[in-house]
Image 1: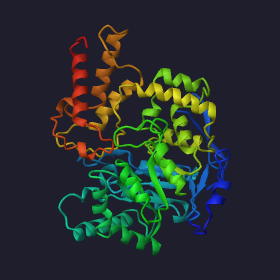
Image 2: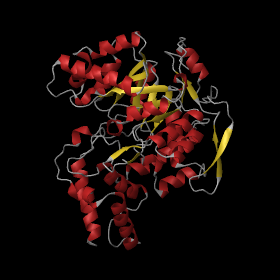
Image 3: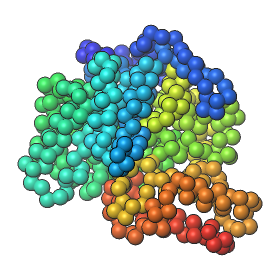
Length: 467
């Protein structure tokens, strides 16, 4: 898989067509196995030899179109009762299953899972031959910049982060290395401070020349001027990671930019894309009834999530689509979706446009539960507060008035579910509006404002008031 032969883009396009993307061979040589569905009622196949692969032109890497995002590894209580830790046994099980079923791309970063993701991912992957997987991690020095450090101090802290990544991931080279989340804060000046003025990008380019980085790229959120600035530099980027889904294609909001533009600019330059947020923070897996009925009328057995993943994987310039799979049933479903991939066709694009129209009118908070905002200094569980509210919105159950049908039943379901999902001391009512979280949010959500809105809605339900 680490074949370094130079594969020309023409051959890449010829080999990987949008209408015939199911290529390459199995990692395991097995046929398939049967697992129960998430309902436990039906038996479905989870193929081990049908994964769709794409080829990276610069290195010839054969990468699974389903990539494993390691931002949300499961946690458990520590044995001594003192806080939480990564559930390493479950992580090992998920990674083993993924590799056995053809997934070979694993994406992590130093800040993920409260700073534990790289080490947990390294433990799980190091139990497998190094040529069975590709590791992607990131230069996440955005929290060092803008703090008054000298160029030398910022460079040294960043290089230390790079070497810690190698150590935590138990490897002497990185297959894919990204400048993490360019486009934030002050835009181009912040990008220059993080990577250019201190010589860090030059250092990473030398690491690529030395073979310790095989593919160098960046991930993007924020000011599109930074995206264009990086692409128009004289750096040869091996890949770029962008947010893309059928909502963000032409209707991106917050710090996001329309994926139609981003992917188009990459394709002009023959730069492959890695896709993040194909489910828009889970929103596209939790469609309301009206939207879901449009999709099930075409494919009754397919989930809303499988539609979103197929959409993200259809463009031939995409080499992998990341999914943060915490549960085995999600991993199994996604493997089936990409084993092999059935590209989205014209009739299906039309259906997704109708779904988009419905979704754009929903009262939804654009949180992807990345946990960058955590921990809250006042104990508020921001991702789970937003997550509970969004699930209500996605199910079409947000109450507008006490005259709504089934008001009392829906009211009780919201309030009981809220208490079960989020302990009372960690609910929205405990947000004091300090705004510590706001600059940390990649979606540019005004978190205190949304907390106040949720708290008002919750209090109205508790008091049985009209609203």
